[in-house]
Amino acid sequence: MGHFFFHLRAGEQLILDEEGLDLPDVSAARHEAVLSAREILAAAIRAGKAMMPDAIVISDEAGRALDVVSLVEALPETLKK
Image (cartoon, rainbow, N blue to C red; front, top):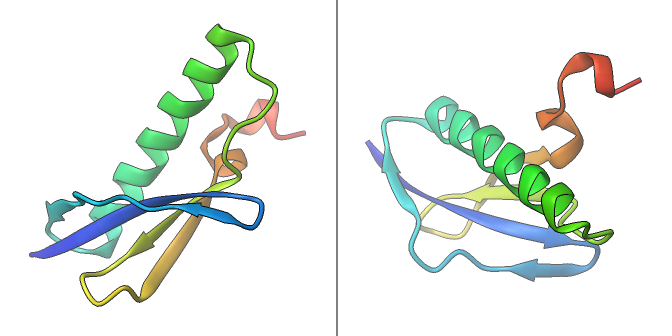
């Protein structure tokens, strides 16, 4: 079990997740990031927003970046083309 943070990256800006989540491993954290990316995309589309984060950076309690999930990765395969 680990504590993971999900920071939003928008260009050069990093919006820090101050709370994080306790999850079993990095794989579970990545799954959570993909679900969050889908929620962010859906909310942006509903609101008609043109600007949104590029990616979610997953980090551990020490602040080390463990993985990056781009919002494009959260799209269904048919929309990536």
